[in-house]
Every structure is written in structure tokens, then in C-alpha cells.
Image (cartoon, rainbow, N blue to C red; front, side, top):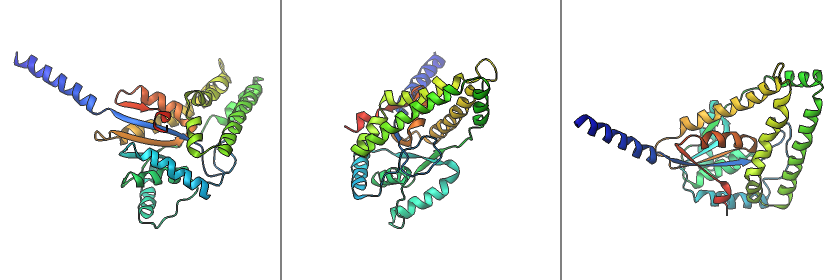
Length: 266
């Protein structure tokens, strides 16, 4: 009888503990502020240091700070954590001017308003090792039209985001590009076009897509490794292309509640 009581107590305790550890996580997919960078389809340069954009960034981070998040995670390699800590410490004492990067312009600015002592670097870069093989396979199998169609759709998305940025505030742009349908469009580029290249033969396209999933799975591993039991709310700031995959991973981990950006930025 005592054993049954003990098992019941342990089970109830673990259930309660699991519920207590539920962490809200807000995924913010961004455009990259700095150019040039490594994205194949990148936005045109915008002056994010202008008075107008700086005011918009203040408005954005003021709104995000209302979440009382206990961690801010950015798209910077875990290997650069020490240098990032040094830069952030200098920023807190007004000895570092924020460069044109969403990592600092949003991430550092927000973390300071949240009174955080630390910014979490969670990126892990894997080279797209199957890139050249996929291109060669597409040519060999008369599938170059797939890459052409991919480029057409990617450019339409880029032009749309360029136009959104020209006429809207940074907050409005982020709300737009984080809509579920926009996230789906981005992931669809990989699944609709690339995955078909070499199918049934060398699967070069599928292996290329697997490189992208591997990088995001490594990022996800860094997220869950760095979230602590005491964290009730975490904000992640990353390039928009990563968000649909990271969102899928986190939605299927019952330690997390994924928060929709448009529910935060009214």
C-alpha cells in the first residue's frame, strides 16, 4: 500500500513539475538588416540607423519588453558566446554603438530593456554540402526548370518584403512576414522545388534540404539546452527562413508553448 501511495505521489509530482516547466517561447522571424550576407535572395539595403528606423526599433522593443522575457536568443554561433557577452556588457555601459544588425538592433536593445545580463547565442552553421551536387543533378536530369521556378517565387517574396519595408514600420513588416502563410511560403521553396531534384536516383535535392533541416535541428538543440526550468518566457530573434522549421520542432515539444507574434504586437 505504501508503495502504491509512493508511486502515486511521484507521478502526481512529476505531472505538476512538467506543467510548471512549460515555457512560453516567442519566435520572431526577421529580415537581415545588414547587407551583403550569405542569403541567396536578400533584401535591398535600408537605412536602419536613420532616426525614423531607430524610433521604430524603440517602439518594437518597448512592446516586446512587456513580455518580461527572461532570455533573448539571437542568430549568432554558440562559439561566439564569449565575444557576444563582451559586446553586450560594453553596450550596457554605453561603450558600444550598435551596428546595423538585427541581432544587436533588436536583440541587444530588447535585452537591455528586460534588464538581462546575458544574450543567448544559439546558431550553428552547417555548410550546404549538397549544393553543387543538386545543381549538377538538376542539369543532368533536365530539372533546371525547378530551380528557375524556385528563383521566381523567391524573388516575388523578396520584392514583397522590400515593398512592405518601404511603406511600413519595422513592427508592421515583422507582423507581415511572421504570418503563418508567409512562413509556409518560405519553407515551401525547399519542399516544393528542391526536394524533387534527383528523386528516385541520387536524391541530391532531398539531401540538400536535409542540410537545411540539420542546421535548424542543431539550433533547436541549442534552444532546449539553454532554456532553464525558471524560464517562463523566452524570445528568439532569427532570420525568417528558420522560423517554420523551428516552430514545428518546438510545437512538438510539450515543454513549450509557442507564442504567435501577432498576438504580442497588437
